Length: 166
Image (cartoon, rainbow, N blue to C red):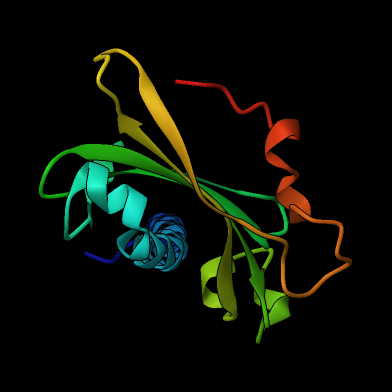
């Protein structure tokens, strides 16, 4: 029994849409992985955070993580849980991409367009002695290495983003 042209076309279309969806998910994961790896390196070198959370600060479960990209794919905002030997907390970061290799890919698949991600803002929410309250530690806040020098990049500054205390 031969497949009709419509069935072949429908199968090809469903397969293509599934492939593009999977590629988009993988692309977002690559960006998240690059940004979170840089943030964990900074967090593991911060002495104040180490005294609160303990040694060997590691990323928590991925299902509790969030990520957002700007429309052009040049800035990212991530949040994910971290655990140490003593306690756990959350890291919030804002990063920008520079040194893009394949600019034409950026609007479609930002993770595959190359370049490096630089963490500009990194904050940690850690537990305090009062159980419902959490302390916010500013681990890093710097201007991008390149660009117009306006600070904050496309993400804006923390005061303009609607940053709320948790």
